[in-house]
Image (cartoon, rainbow, N blue to C red; front, side, top):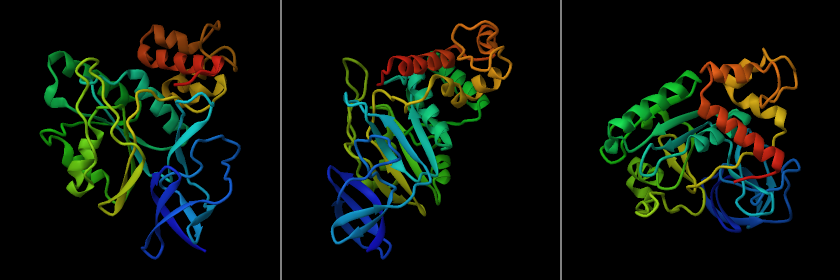
Length: 302
């Protein structure tokens, strides 16, 4: 048996770079389970696996992984990638606008698995005065919360070199809502990547999916993981009392709540609600928190 790194998934087949540097195609032999979590894909890019012939027979323990609720009705989750050093979330305030809730849902999942996130605001070459005000508000909000933020234009190249430097010797997951320019950015890292891109829908000003499967691309001593664009991001299963832990500002304020089991919805003496009323906590962030809380109480997902 030999070991290797999963670089690409294509349905039931996995492209693996072995420790000897050979590229092989393998598929799963038998069933794999991940700590009781039902997933649509037991193996993801970034996994280290053991292979015997053309069969994957072992998954090595993971340092971490990024997961989202599957869009089907089976209540399963989808592992986006495993063993990640950092994640870059590419967003925009126009064409298409990234909803604040989408950003927060991604951040909550990353917080749960202790994956540091950098938020990259793309398409700044298109921003008018109102857009720039919104950009500044977003960057101020998330910077205060401890997230690194960058404003870039894939079209003009503004701000791109600084991002490139942050990728050195790292395994970096790139994600974003459809049409935000993620694939275009990956193309300018290295033209040979030749990732497919698509225009924005003129009718709805939303993106169209172009990347079908996740893929690891070698870059600057590390890897860039290109993932399919998504329109919604459903978080992993959490009990109501856990959700606030992954909002740093809510977790901090919750220490002053009257009741230890407060879920910051309508309880008396809730310090979080008071902090929202006094604008210490962003209303948009609190709305995202309530939305995720509703998902968990009603077993909904996106």
